Length: 119
Image 1 (cartoon, rainbow, N blue to C red):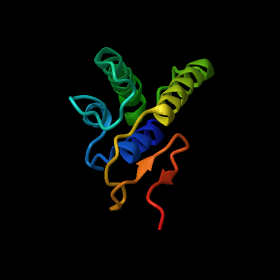
Image 2: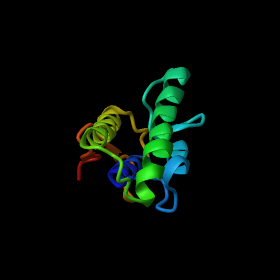
Image 3: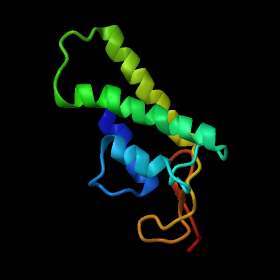
């Protein structure tokens, strides 16, 4: 489940394939000019960054490396719901104009389709 979330963060941010987990989330969502922007308010942007980072650290790290036999169906459903919520937040985030796939001026829109200059 976290592979899908990390892949979406990489797609939107343009971050390196070498980054993963909390390092990827911080590179994409923190700093003075975040690559994925949830809010123009610094406190809300930092809160979103910490929400994603917390999920990455607390959920991803545990289930990414081994099966957890004690997890019930309800727990797995809760975790999937959390990841689904984070994916939905990404779908509404602002992505600053930058070069995507080598074409300047392309940005991701809500449905993660590419839009850009007409040819």
